Image 1 (cartoon, one colour):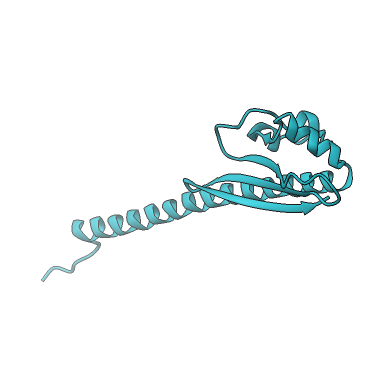
Image 2: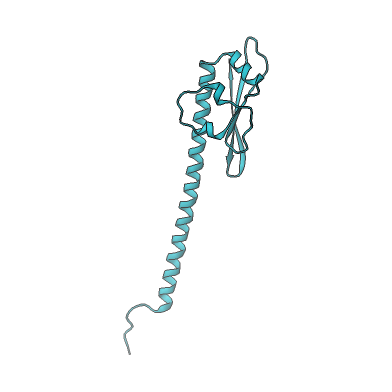
Length: 141
């Protein structure tokens, strides 16, 4: 009887197909992880922007500044302004009259009572895996 050395063609094809399936699964997992990482990074950046804007409004802006922005219809912040790395926030140049067509964008609103206490609301609209997600921040001035 002959002694059998090595692998048969069927054994090699099975091992290559199993290895290929494992590689495909690992690539799919890595692609999904990269998508999640990008979405999380953009969300964190938008939340950081909204927090900086909230601090700027609460510390440096007056009620009259907010009233003027709303009266002029400048209540929208577009995506390009959110992703700018400008450290100085100028409210008049930051807000615009045009609503952005693409997320993320921010909307400024107020309760309309410009007396003793004014409630200011910032709403950040994000595209979160194909669904619109809204983060809101309210402050009193």
